[in-house]
Length: 101
Image 1 (cartoon, rainbow, N blue to C red):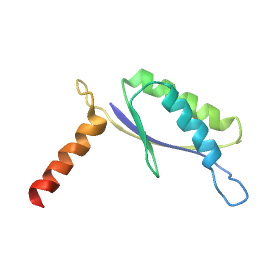
Image 2 (tube, rainbow, N blue to C red):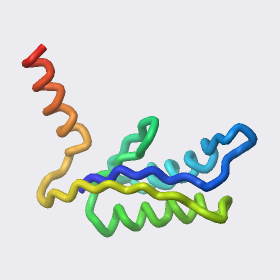
Image 3 (cartoon, rainbow, N blue to C red):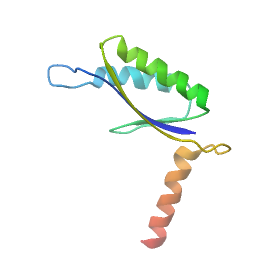
Image 4 (cartoon, helix red, strand yellow):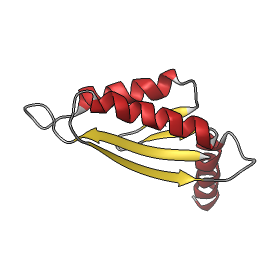
């Protein structure tokens, strides 16, 4: 499965930024060893249900250490038997775009 998550504290720094808290969450995800990628809005994680959810909980807990309230957005693509989809899904779309060029 692939999960896209966005974790953010309710408050930010003096400019409203949340980079420090988000970086702590992303570090937890990257340290998990699961395939992942981070973009401007989400971090995508690939793996099995239980291992992903354990990582999501740990990432939320790290942000909660510095914020009394944490927001979590989670979207999941549950497709048993498929791996390597972080890149493969994008590759399939790019192939269509190239063919239609």
